[in-house]
Amino acid sequence: MEEQPELVEACLEKWDLNWLLHRATQRVGAAYADEIAKFGISLRGQLVLGALANEEAQRTQLKLGAMLGLDKTTLTSELDKLERIGLVMRVPDPNDRRVRTPMITDKGRELQKEAGDALAEVERAFHSRFTAEEMALIRKALQDLSRGEGPMHGSCI
Image (cartoon, rainbow, N blue to C red; front, side):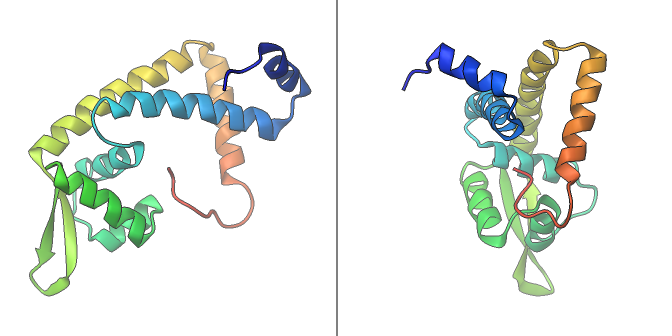
């Protein structure tokens, strides 16, 4: 379905915060999703790889899920995908065979770095539309809105 420019402009002029944030999220999210797809993984997969690549200490699947805000089913599904393509492996705990510790492979570390660099370019392209001062203000406003009131539900992606 093709957008009607005059309809979009009419919506933009309403200054409805929910619509504007939703629309901005769609645009930014699509740009990131298009870029990460070139690497054969999802944004959530990149999030998991990034957490594993930056970990000094090993974390069990349960602790990794809690850190990323991902439920057990979602994380297991993502780890299954990453493991199938050789980007992670799950090492059994020698003291409890029910516990698995996800570990990033060398291939996973390399892909995570390349994908991270590519996503940083996507972000730089969005930043280039604004001055440094505007970008700082946008970031602060979004952080303040993200904190909100009460508990946060759902994953960070």
